[in-house]
View (cartoon, rainbow, N blue to C red):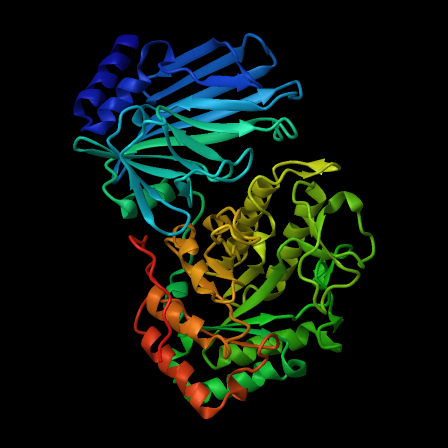
Length: 569
């Protein structure tokens, strides 16, 4: 049997083209090949191999280590070679556990063969540019910031993906997006800070080496096929949208109807599927959203604090049907990030991550951000999502989780409930999107990441939209934000509302021409003038821009240069 397995393995090895030969050879290296390094505080630990098994028929090797100085620390590495249509893949699944709490930072240096010898590295940079470098004398390559100890690298990655060139070979190395990843010569590195240590009973990372990656498009495609294989792309209809609207229960709730009645006079039925209207401000209070935790259902009636009027489920259903019957795509506001109101009964201080945030008329007693490291907080949002989707998912086309940027990279939670809150938030977004897809396939769940250059409060935001169906953010359509949404939403879309849609119409014009973002209308906040309240000249300007934009489907691509801001005269 052993002889037959070896013959089978070497038949595969001899038949496998190019880079896959290296992967099979690496898998078969004596004693498991390269050994991870672990730094505990300021000293490196000695890893002792406790188990090793090479399953040739499965093209898989399992190696387990123990730290001699810290026997409680266990490390398992499962490496497996497989093929997808475009090329070979060597996947490393790393697991770490410890029966003792850490007293020092613990840094993992995981060896990666493709990172040892390279002539050029190319990156999806956070600012939307495709960057590259050929000088690696500092032994570092690039860095991605998320949970753990994020370090801002000169080559700051939008997601943990590095394209590599050596002679005539083109390949890529990538990791899961849930934790910081620093790409060095020969290794991927990340750190568990002592304040949290191993939050999960078993901490897991996935590192992938893959061949035949010719350019950024193929690199991004490979990332979706491997790292994000459990996350489906957004539905195709999102790429047809050429106009978006936000209504914050405008004009005592009448603005929604007035704007729709006016839009139908300007937009023919054949184009209305390219217009998405989002119903905002429909709920009672930020942090509750009409959800009754005792019954697990939404309230039948409630007082809308934004306008001081009574609303009901029947009223919201009518608003949705009114827009849908006229051919428009309807979206619904999900929540304001992890924000809640201190004035709500039953406030648990342990759930407070930090105070502050949006403090509008739909907030009572002041705002605070909930801590997603607390299981009760996660449970609330999942249960609320199920109730909301059960009521409305069959009628609307998608939901918008606003202000997801509140949780920044590297946040470690509060004393009462410490943890990697950015990772927890990312996992929660993935779970809620999955809940929606189960309830109603073809419906979309959007985040609002507002990723920016770091000169303001949203410069350290992880790419939460990677785990959703796209990003409908509240960046005011500011020109400098657009490029930061390209790579996290590469296969989906990046939109923004503009509450000053008339005052800053030029922002919308720039977005349409430079990035092919949708035309934006809003009502109920900021300029507080919906489409029905515009002059004929203003309406014509928006419709003319829509008629231009509707010719194109969304197709995001990395940039070689940032488009300079311009205003049309």
